[in-house]
Image (tube, rainbow, N blue to C red; front, side):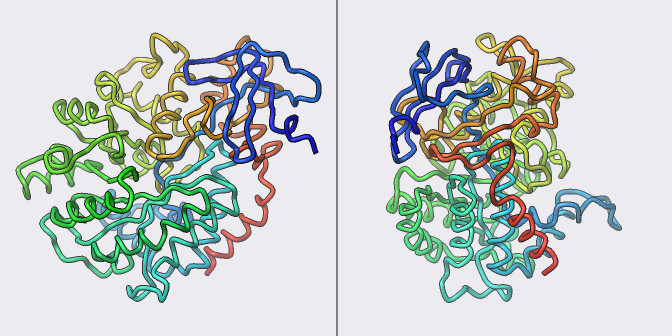
Length: 461
């Protein structure tokens, strides 16, 4: 086989980090890393030609894989006014009986869905650690390894973020029964990271740490876990839920006299390694200071809407040069373009304007959002997945130019806009490639049917 031919793709239109380019020749090596991105190239004989606009692969920067299994089970009104906190009780119930085999089946199906919907990598915020009785498995990494196997089988890139979870509320309040599978000491977390580090390295996965939230990790544990992480890998990513709910903000003020983001900035060396998940309820000073750290805001618009969290002020964040990416979080929706649409629409409702997240450089809002979400997602993933540039991974999504809602449009900008705002937001995806390997062809993953069957079986128990 002539590998120099099979590792090349000619794209008449490709979305590079600085915008759309014509006649782009991509070349990559046996590791799936891009070795050439040549603009204005000629296709040449024997080189495959893209059949539609080529997008960089989209990172999904926030996932709780097991939660895909109870989508549809929380959309009814309970005895009291429903909120995030009532939803959380139902989530605990779903987590209480999950087996390693069920988790792997659910995650495999989910990761296949992600690939078919335009995600090429995932940050897995993993907090179900222990057996159903709350005791550690004989191999403490049992459930983490199930997630790594699922990612490898589906063919999606992964940043694994084991979650440190120790208390039920600010001030080190004791955990309760519903959290028994999450709780672990700081020492046991650091031992878990040491156990997982070589496994992740072998798979090409990235390992980081997720202090769950300020209410779940007391200050001493936060400090000690971050120091321990630095000793293991001083470049590892750090993700944390913060300021998701107004109730959280009020509880933090009562505990410390400070708002959550303000407290975090005052007590941790937040920098570009950090991803602040949700960060919905910041005041102006918090937003300005947090953006200046270089941290990424991890936005999950469909989950935030589903849970009634509130609306992130993206214009304010971007005014401070704040970086951001998207995640599907609880997986009530698994679709990269849907998250972009939901984010833009939330900003339109907030500001009563249109095309809010377009920029002077990228006047088509779908193009501007895609570029920013890829850049922010790559940073939060701590993997070389920042788009079409030499040294980055050969991850892409090819749109179907013959799709009835894309065909006949005058530009790649317009086709991407139709994909995000006018199609079914996955129907126009023709191909998805991860590290140079095709994972989705003609819109379908080879494991699609069997993986979905595994999800159904896992839900039935």
